[in-house]
Length: 281
Ligand SMILES: [Zn+2]
Image 1 (cartoon, rainbow, N blue to C red):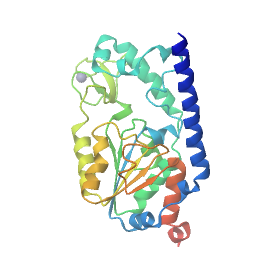
Image 2: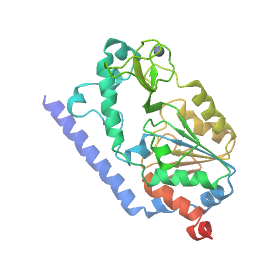
Image 3: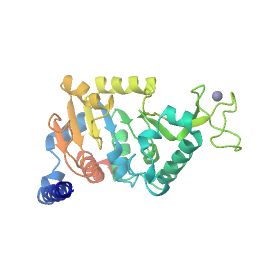
Image 4: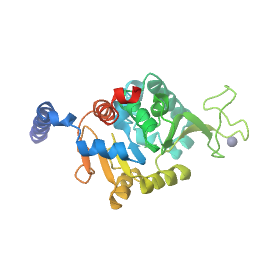
């Protein structure tokens, strides 16, 4: 008991110390917001920019992470046991209600400066593709048009039987039934143990193989196949830029790693690359 208490205390102290070091680095290292001139040049001349985004950019809009959504009534459930086809088969109503709750959380979020900066980047470069692992639709809300949703979208639905889109249903039971076959309606998101949508996966790989500038933004770089996309670009000698407040497995391999909040770093990069006066003149 004493040993356990000690190790908990030591762990807490280490974490506090670690947080402190991180904080000081951010506070002291103003270079967090020094955008390298070489990166500005690379973006200005890029013909095809591919961008991969993850939960980090949505977190800055207040969208809780997968695990962070487990509050209140839902705190007792493990999300890994709700976001699976087996869970839906076992208790479709529970899973349906969990997603209704997550949709409600997401509906309160608005795109932040990082989302808006990416939509603006798309307007400046000749060719652009945004690959996102997020299911909240905030990129589209911000004005992004070329968007690949690797993990689906919380606001879309499909038939559990036929795997085809469902847009309307009779509000008689929860979950509702597919008007064509009577199968259960489920959220159109990728669950654990499921394959990514084939078209989305292929389009993402193609973008990473064809772009001449690649950004990895707000993603931990741990989940495949998204994790290997920047390496696909690096292998061809393409400039890879990481923007993330935290260190990730990609940080040491990226051509440029900008450590800071996406909502601050990206707008600055856009302003430096395409100054307002130039855009208006
Ligand atoms: Zn159906």
